[in-house]
Image (cartoon, rainbow, N blue to C red; front, side, top):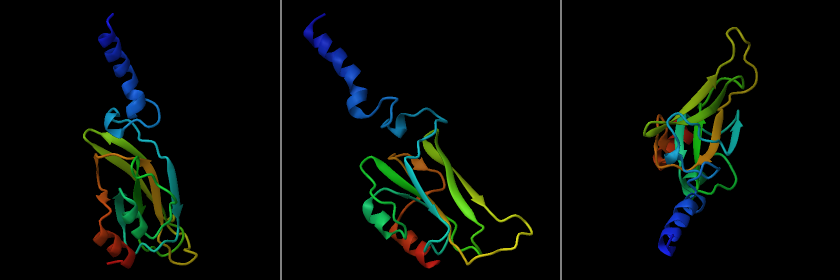
Length: 162
């Protein structure tokens, strides 16, 4: 085997390690198989927030995240993105929302967002709430069904309830 062939073989074998395209953590979402789940790296939820209306947003940069009324701590936007699901104002603390799963679906991503309501006949207690759930996942350029990019006007509207 000549040196050029050996160099080509080593380059091909090393490419997934250096490009983040292996089956290990760091794999790019675009290379996942249809139906494969995208890992949730970190998450945060709360019953009370300043989201004034329902929101489903994908956030791709620090500036947009800083406009959101939540604190997720550091996010590496070169390799990560944030998905936020907020219910907006609800009458009590018995409501919740969770992004349960994110997966590859053809040429896009889909999220299973579960909304929980108090059981029928339950006496509502506590003060008005505004539940949200935010997840940090590996960054992707694929569209996320039913999640818009966190545009400034949507963020402001979500905070004010307009």
